[in-house]
Length: 143
Image 1 (cartoon, rainbow, N blue to C red):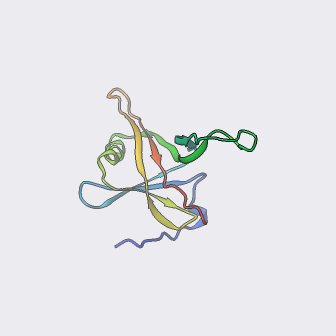
Image 2: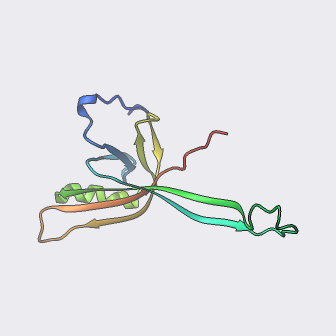
Image 3: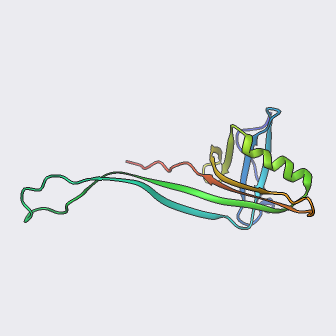
């Protein structure tokens, strides 16, 4: 049985680590450490406003009011030069019902969602690539 938190030695941590695990088809977890380069992105979507009736434009502070907005936090990760066996294992992440990322700040696994994926395997090549775009959890605001 694996512990809920990882005890990681500082000497073992690569540059820019991004550790992912997913539930495989045998009800166990497979793991992958993505390193070197990740692309983090914040994207604002679904901006909802309304325009209230303004009876006195002299005292009005604007013509529209914000009701809601959604900010999506995502990361693009990938790995290159995979052999056939490693590519087969990693490409099964697309079928997994559970995908998690280890958050070093929180010291725990957090659920993520695969937004898009590109798993490329050419039969005439010995090295293959996998690239994933993961939707990270929304940060909770302290009120």
